[in-house]
Every structure is written in C-alpha cells, then in structure tokens.
Amino acid sequence: MKNDRLIPGLVLVLIGAAFLLDNFGYIDFHWSNIWHLWPIFLIIGGVNLVFAHNRSPLATTLKIGVVVLGFGLLLFGNFGDRWGWWPTYSYSWHDHHDHDNNDSDDDDDDDDDTASTPAKGIVKVEGNSDFGMPYTADAKIAQLHISGGGTEYNLSDTTNQLFQASTQEHFGKYEFSHSNNGSTYVLNFEMKNKQGHFNFDTHGDNSNSATFKLNPNPLWDIHVETGATDLKFNLTKFKVRTLELSGGAAAFHVELGQPVESNTNVEVSAGMASVDITIPQTAACQIITSSALSSTNFDGFNKTSDGNYETPGFENAKNKIIINMSGGMADFKVHRM
Image 1 (cartoon, rainbow, N blue to C red):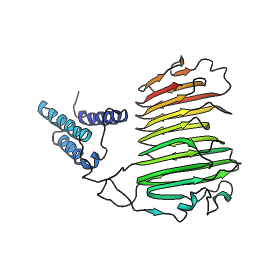
Image 2 (cartoon, one colour):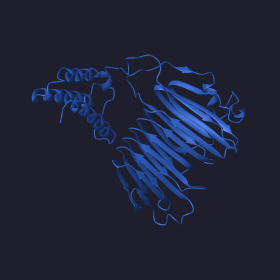
Image 3 (cartoon, rainbow, N blue to C red):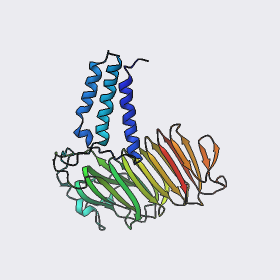
Image 4 (tube, one colour):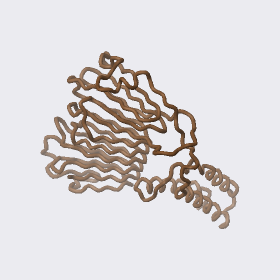
C-alpha cells in the first residue's frame, strides 16, 4: 500500500485516541498545550512534504517519529501557567444585569411581553453572575435551550422562580433570553464566542461553569447542544417531558425520575462521549441504539431486537421512559436504581 496517506491517517488516529483517553480519564490532557506547541503541526507538515516522494524505510521512520514525538509532547507535556495564552476579558454588564436577576425581577417589564416576543437579553462578560426569571402560575410548559461548549453544567436543585442560573465565566460570555406564547415559556441560555483581550496572567481556576435551578411545577423540555462539556443533571425532582443531549467530546451524567403526566422522551446524539443515565428501578423504559462502534451497558434490560432493549413489563406500562441513543465512538450506560 502506498504510504503517502500514512501520516494523515496516523494524525487522525492519534487525535481521536487523545480525545477518547482524555474523555475517559486515562490521561490528563492539558488543552493549553495546543497553544504552546502549535508549531509542531508545521513541523509535521513540513517533514511530510520534504519526504513526500521518498518511500525509503528511513524516510518513513523519520515521518512517523516526528508525528509520534510531536503528539507525545502535546499529550503529556505540562508547562504550567507560565505561558498564559488563554484569553481573559474585561468586565462588561448591561444596565439591567443586577436588577434582572433578583427575586423581584424585571425592571424591563419582561413579564409583560406580548406572546412570542423575546425579552431583552441579559448579558455578562467574565466573572460570576446570576440569571433569573420569576415563576407565574400560567407557566404550564417550559422549554429550556442550552448551547455552548467548554463548560461544566450542573442541575439538581429547585427554585421558587421559573429559572435560575449561577455562572463562572472566563473564555466567553453567557447570554439569557426568554419569551412566552400563552402557557409555554421558552428560555434560551447560550455561551457566546470569547471576546476581549489577551492577558498573560492565567492564575486561578480558569474554567466556565453554570449551575441551574428549575421550578418543579411545569412540564420541562430540556435541549442541550454542546461540544466538550461535563454535564451533571439530577432531574428526579422535575417533570421532564423531553430531554435532548447533543455533544462531541462530552461527558453526560443524567438521573431521571418517574415519568409524570406523559412519557419522558430522551434523545442522545454523541460523538466521542461518555453517556451515563440512571432511571428508577420501577420505571418502564425502552432503549433504542444506533451505533456500531459504541460500547453499551444496559443492566436490567431485556434485548428485544438488534439495538433495542426494554425493561420487563414495558408494553403494559402507562407512563414510560423512551431513550434513543446514537453516536460515533461513544460509551452508553443506563442503570436502574
């Protein structure tokens, strides 16, 4: 076989292996190494071009050696914080930032919006901030849309507001907006692109995180679209109608409660991700998977057909949890507790 595709293929294999090993905790990849050592990619490309038409064993060994050595430095090099290439940002608040997030919210009369008219966005750049929206009894269905990677998302507690979020921001900014159409409230929480100036002082815990609290009364539709993310959602206190998780090199840890008032539908679309879902022991559940390269572990389920699993008595249950999973090289687990 011609070896002119050897180096590109080897680079892709090593990149994929790095994501997988870091995602499952076998290595501690310092992502800032990409900024420190990016010229390695120029060296790899240059060596490959110089010896592009040389298929001697020596040339092949040299090309492979440069790739392996370069990725070894990227994966295992630890340069501390002395090269602070990650950006930090200026503080910037909208006029309503502090007022919009108190329990006596909405100096901007967000709750008086006409149907389907978005409220003003609430924006904060770098630092810690709180977002909130008051609960009203007419909120029967709440749709929460979360987007943005490079963030740790946590949800477990309730609130007497409809929605609360506390954030720690470094590499970008969070933006929250909302609208309503009758008894259906739509909440959008987004991580925007990083802005600001470069600062060479990176001491401290430079990570993004968002901790949510939801009101337990409405039916919840939760949609999360993210990249590299660590998500921990304990939803046992909430009436979840729909949960959609979409991510790349992500770790999703979700605990569901009993389906209430309607079925709970879970859609998971993952790349090289770890997905761990816990359901009640007595809940009727069906799992549908479509991924040839992913690993699965569904304890307490009966396999009914290729890629389909059910708990005993699923067909006769009134309310059910239905989980659809698709992914690339993902690790899918569902536990009954």
